[in-house]
Amino acid sequence: MSMLDNTGDRANKANIDNIHNIVEAQRAYFATGATRSKAFRIDALKKLQRAIRENEPMLAEAMKRDLNKAHMEGYMCETGLVLEELSYHIKHAGKWMKERRVHTPLSQFYAKSFISPEPYGVALIVGPWNYPVQLCLNPLIGAISAGNCAVIKPSAYASNVSHAIARLIGDTFPREYIAVIEGGRAENQALFAERFDYIFFTGSVEVGKEVMRAAAEHLTPVTLELGGKSPVIVDKDADIAMAARRIAFGKALNAGQTCVEPDYLFIHKSVKASFIEAYRQALDSFFPNGDMRDMATIISDKHYSRARSLMNEGDIVVGGSYDDERRFIAPALIDIDAIGPDAAIMQQEVFAPILPMMSFEAIDQVIAFITSRPKPLAFYLFTSSKATEKRFLSSCSFGGGCINDTIIHLASSALPFGGVGESGMGSYHGKRSFDTFTHERSIVKKSTKVDLDMRYFPYSRRKLNIIKLFMK
Image 1 (cartoon, helix red, strand yellow):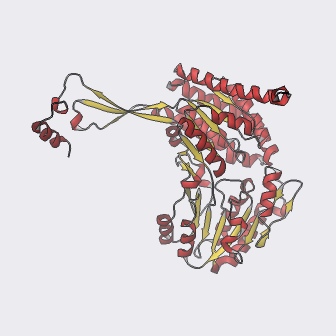
Image 2: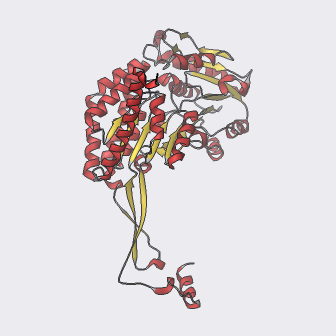
Image 3: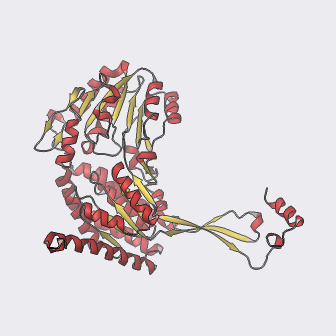
């Protein structure tokens, strides 16, 4: 009996065939040139803006069901950021898409040179489960403002948000322009087998490598937004109470399931005890009487089991209670000085509200540790010393970060966001999103009234001497 005689397999085959048809339909639609005009792009951005505003309660409810995100957190960290990004693109995209005149060398007399931005074509956007609204729709804004068609693949782990995004996009745009493909691994593989003009992926390093292998088959350019172990350093001259509060915020937010979460802490030995107490007080102020109902939960049983296992080593000095039934872990601060970098929690990205802490006495040892490991997506330093700040910034490579805060650098449309090395490649937000989904054509328009003969055969000493006058 054929595998396709099974109803589930037939449905799966039909869905995969549908993926190919959608991509081909988008390719045909893009070829009409409909998406290229300024009016079309701005109108599409405004349609998306209206749709998000009208469906904000639906998105909030979906995030609550998938991750127990409080309405405020969902708006502050997802829906609101998308609306801010939309406003920024609506205001500036018309300027970004204009041709730009650039200098023409005298040796090219008489001509003018300009850069002509053009959309890549059909883009694939693969979103993760941890910020399932923002990390699907923010890249889409760049694809739209740059004039592309797009296929969006939300994460199956955040199934309620996936359904909500599919409904929102389906009610707003025709599938030959923007489409949402729901599903899991089979749909991912089918999408990666298609030929896209650009792939934008947010997720783990392991899957990012699979995406690059698939993209290589068609030599498709990619942006990879990955993760890694992002350090936070608290020096002896830092404002300890504020550092503890802002680090605790970065760790409790979305239950630590943030690609730029503070992954591990280096604390100066002299302020270790005071920091521990300040961290406890910060969490007490966040969750009065221990009420943590507004804190997010871990996305799945698989992810919860992995996170719980990371608490088996070290000394839990703050928090750390858990609820297996809810897949909930209270923010925990773990002293791993007795184990050091060999602790299991230091071998993988934590992605949970668990913060391992190691003490230091000399800045050199911290710099040596960070620079000997893969470049992180984020970097956080708490200090009042400009010399210390300069020292770290001139020594450590990372995607982006904050001095005396955590997380917030990714919330600005004026700052490009992205990784370096194993934490990713490429960046987006604001104009960088437009640039990411745009190919810049370099064009020289030469006059037909003048045609200098010095470049043509036959070559001569005289021509060489003339060329040396212009090219030096």
